[in-house]
Image (cartoon, rainbow, N blue to C red; front, side):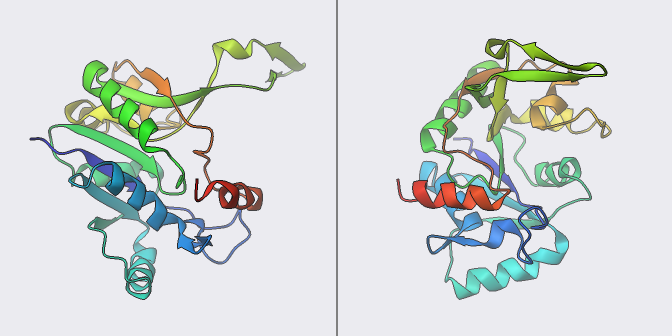
Length: 222
């Protein structure tokens, strides 16, 4: 049976967090953020192949953290590239050529297994699927003359994991990087792949600022 591949990208530096420690390595409720992320995917699929992409200069730190925390969950660690695009590209070079590849932000530790399951199932049927959420706030578009109101029903907030049939996402990442690439879905769309939207989960926040830590502390053990 073809295994799922989970590529976890963790290239943060901690600047927006105003921390000397990159956000993927901080502890919340006694657990390292990145370890919680990997644990969630391992819980969802103990037989899946986890590829962790880290900046070259952080690989030794991660090795030390794993030793200190006695962390033995199986995963492969590789060095990333100069951008997230290039880091994913490197991760894909270690991924299987068949099955589903799910690409996830390492600092989204509270993704639910239901969200992962639904996105993978949709990718198996449609080729590519990403979790998303309806907007709850009103939105406006900035224009040269000020701003304009927009119908929020026509927009969605995008999360990860973004899931793809292996051959589709590998083909997509053979192209050159473009400024228009905002996530893996936009890379896939550039070569004609259609993206199917699935339901995300509200707690699947990307930990970027101090306020995100406070929210994560509330939801961590749920």
